[in-house]
Length: 135
Length: 135
DNA sequence: CAGTATCCTGGACGATACTG
DNA sequence: CAGTATCGTCCAGGATACTG
Image (tube, rainbow over all chains, first blue to last red; front, top):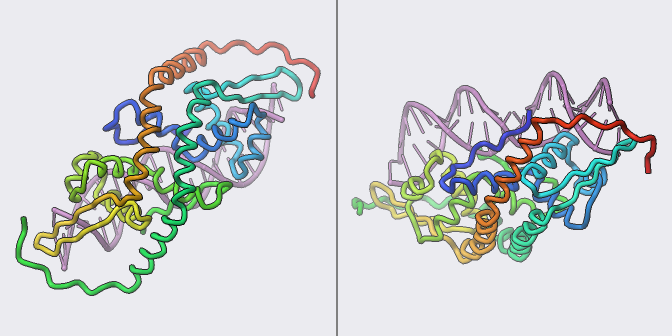
C-alpha cells in the first residue's frame, strides 16, 4: 500500500520519523506551495508539476496524518477538496525556507567545488610510496 | 556504481540537486557529527551506527565532491584518513540544526495528531448523500 | 584501516485504468 | 474532480568478500 518511510538510523530516536516524512520527494514542496494559501487537489498538482496522482495523494495523506494540513471535502458533484496548512504546517515553513535560502546562497560555491572535484578526478595523481608507520 | 539522486521535480532548477544530496539517508547525520571535529572513517562509522561501509564511503565522497568536507589521507600503513568539515560544511549546520530543533519542539504535537488520525480512520464515518452542485 | 567489487532485495515512485 | 486499484520499474542501500 503506502510507502513506509520506515528506515533512518534512529540514533535520534523519535525525531527521525519526522525528518523522514518531510524529507521525502514531495512533502516539502507541498508545504511550501500551500504556504500561498489553501488549494484544491489539481491546482496543487499543476503547480508542483511532475507528481503522479498517486504520490500526491499519499503525500497529502501523510501530511494530514501528522497534522501539517487539513483536508476539507465539499460534498458536491463533482467533489471539491481543499488542502490548507495548519499552524503546525505554517510553522514549518520558516526553517525550511532557511535551508532553501542557504542553498541559494551557496549554489555557486557548490557547483564550483563539484566541477573542480570532477576535474581533479580525471588526471589521477600517481600515489607516492607509503611510509612504514602507524599511530 | 554510485546511487544517483537524479530525480526531484526541478521546479526549483539548480537548488534541487543540493537539497537532494543533503536530503539522502546519511549526509545530514555525517555533517552534524563532523561538527564535533575532524574524524577518521571508522570512528565516524561507529558514531553513526547502522551505516554500511559502502554507503558511508559514497556519502563521504559525495559530500567531498560538493565541498562540504575535506578528505585527508596519511600515507602510512595501515592508512589513516581524516574527514573534516569545510567552512561551507560548517555553515550548513545552522539551518539543519534549526530544522532539528523544530522537530524536537513539535514532536509531541505530531505524535498526537498521528494517533488521532489513525484512531479516526478506524471508525469510518458513513458518507452523507452528495449535493447536486458544482462550482 | 579504509576502502573496492559484486550481488541482491525492498520499497519508493510512476503509468494506466477504473469509479463515486 | 479527486481519488483508488493494480501493475511494473528502478535504484538506494544492505551484506558479504576481497585488497593495498
